[in-house]
Image 1 (tube, helix red, strand yellow):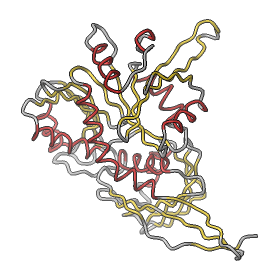
Image 2 (tube, one colour):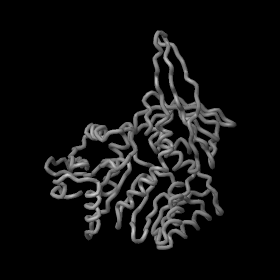
Image 3 (cartoon, helix red, strand yellow):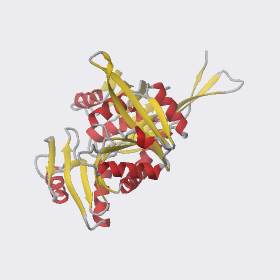
Image 4 (tube, helix red, strand yellow):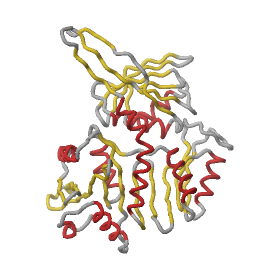
Length: 370
């Protein structure tokens, strides 16, 4: 956290960034993490209300919102562990900053707030966007290094590989030739990066994790924020797609009917096909990530799947249907964009990293009211 005495005067974005850069050069200072929040909130006050609802103590320092939460330690009221973070709005982004441990950020902020609250989620970054970013860095910066990375190949992902395509794999590599080694592992073993440490000499050293965490190491923090904004512009297409998906009841005046305006999303698989043979693995992946099947119908052969899905974390219900090579997501009454975004993340991360998404055109449905 930043000492309160340094936050007594109001801070704007530039002074806050300068303060973090100053703390980063101190010896043994904790590394700052940045998370970009995707929301339906247009005004900062809407986010503040949601944070208060989830038990955070809020303090304003100019344009910087400090959030705190405390928990009892060993049932002793006077001995508490405290979590602190800071949120600001930069252009169209809501940015969360904290130099707490990643485990604490996950526990206090991600799981207990972002993972549960409606209309908010972190900016998940597809692996193919990380790959594209690496290509762009290689072209733009002469002094660009990948110094460490984590890459993987999942059970259901059929990305091309030259050796033993059916094997799940995970690699961690550290070395200044990380860029070259990553390319070799991608070519021979079909793995894709999900955590990458970048060093752009004379600019910034930082880590990108596809679960939405950016870790600032040294250099110009503004450079990293520009990268976050650049990634947001790549992810915004998916975000807007999930925002366009909806379930809405529209009353018809003078008629005893309502129109259900439902806009599903279609996932087109590229490397995966759902079958009766892999359905159990598919269902288990969803369950591990907080999605439970119920009222499921499966026809064998050329698979025909229809099932309602509960988003356990966000308390929402939606329907999925599939003929094997594609999957239709039909939102329910309380399904907000973050549930759909979270589902696409699960499919992309654990099933088909090349999957594509589009709105599925569907006529209005009409039913008589009682």
